[in-house]
Length: 397
Ligand SMILES: *Cc1c(COP(=O)(O)O)cnc(C)c1O
Image 1 (cartoon, protein in one colour):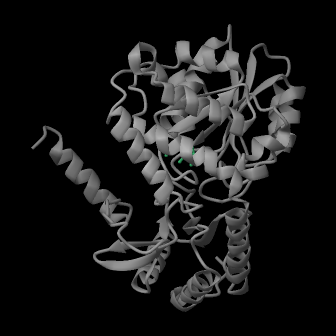
Image 2 (image 1 turned 90 degrees about the horizontal axis):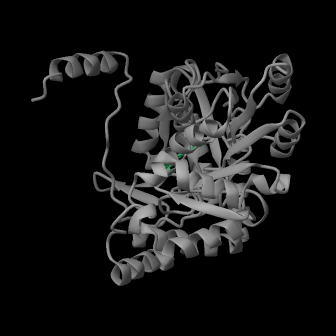
């Protein structure tokens, strides 16, 4: 028993009472493609970020295994000590080529990349930093801003007029501007206008930081992400290998000077052990594979279009989703949970997302599609949502 257990128990009981307590529910992936097993029952997996089905791809898993057998289970040290292996350098060169940048750096995870790179960047600036952030940025970006000790200047979600207004308001203030956003938003599945952001950043001398966690492998030419739309005018692109790439680890891509600077200053890079050979093997294999997956991407986007149309037909709001992430916004947290339970009973696993992950009153099912899904599975999902949404059906929430 820990000293603070009574406090933990009471806080957990309060969360329980508000139906906000989160618990871990183990699953098994020993199931057919696109499915998971929960308590021995196969469920169609509409809740993972394995958008292209690479997480269980045999060739990628084999490459991971080969690297582990050949190079060992661990990298033995942090990158700056003796942890940088040929494998890391080769994977980083492949990532830079994939993203069309001079250089790239591997980091332990996307969370760590954001939490550690932002303070390093902001620390580079002599004098004040004005950090403009989209209101819906990921928790890891908030962690980075907090670590940097800056007060974010938050603009309305994807509202570039508002951003421009806020930039203009402080045009006379000294300091380096930063704009921090995602290219695809994880809970809404909508996209930022990256070329317009790049143009705005250029006009205001702002450094543009773009998190491509959900776009990498899925959007842009050959899955290279939305930064590709802005032709090299994004200063720093970050992304993860834990979503469409099917593995683990993250990257930062940009100029050689940027990456060299981060090697020298980014705490989460310097003081963390290098990614292990198996993980780097999977990363490299995925980066090699992604450009050739246009057919899978086309199928994925067609499924998303079909799902949005199906949900619209039954009066369910999908917000501004235009990607493989489709929220079915139902408003009330209890209702989202009840709907997720009903879907699980029908053999479909869909995550219910509640505050504080999303704003109050916008609880939702977050439907994450994969190229492993079929049109029939998407249709069955819509039918089940229609039949299960309960007494408030059609209330237009
Ligand atoms: C998932 C996610 C991350 C974190 O990436 P991990 O590699 O899973 O730690 C960062 N940013 C966004 C927008 C994400 O959705």
